[in-house]
Image (cartoon, rainbow, N blue to C red):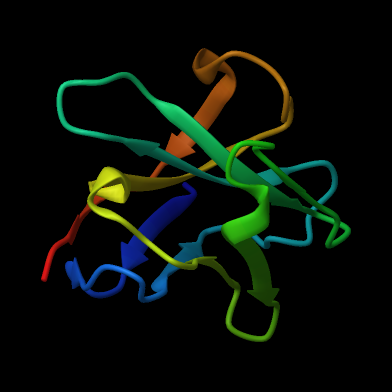
Length: 123
């Protein structure tokens, strides 16, 4: 059974960098052909796809967030991380990490999700 767990600060000040880590257990993040993804849900809104890092290390980001986003991994710890720079209150959301083998497909194609972590951007 694969499990994902998000961790990181719950409060970030405007203009700072949001940093979250997803720790994966029960499966390796280098296993073919999975894509390890960050997704968020702002209050009162739908899910927003942020980006992924694939089994090979390839990354792909939401074009609307690309200039502020970095996703990287630590294979020795079986973790992948998100950094989102220059945050504003509009980045307040519940942030999820999830796994899929269809990285550009519907959210229903994500088979494992973390429980989500609330991040609030406020001074």
